[in-house]
Length: 96
Image (cartoon, rainbow, N blue to C red; front, side, top):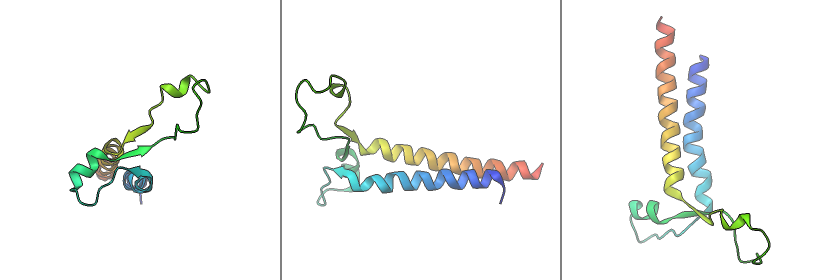
């Protein structure tokens, strides 16, 4: 197996693994709704602000409490695309 194929498989595994691992942290999932609705309405909770005081940290005001899960799915699709492209490119490099 060439270096390009190894890198491509690593990107594909990351593209599948990151959204799959973060699936356990989502909030807002509704089993009665469809897949598109759940991708748009679910989010990943970054931190809980219930225990924070008003003057604890000024920087925490600018950090989002939730990150939409569709951004993670988009990152996964992008990584899978990069992995497929890397495998394809390594195949053509071996022909030369």
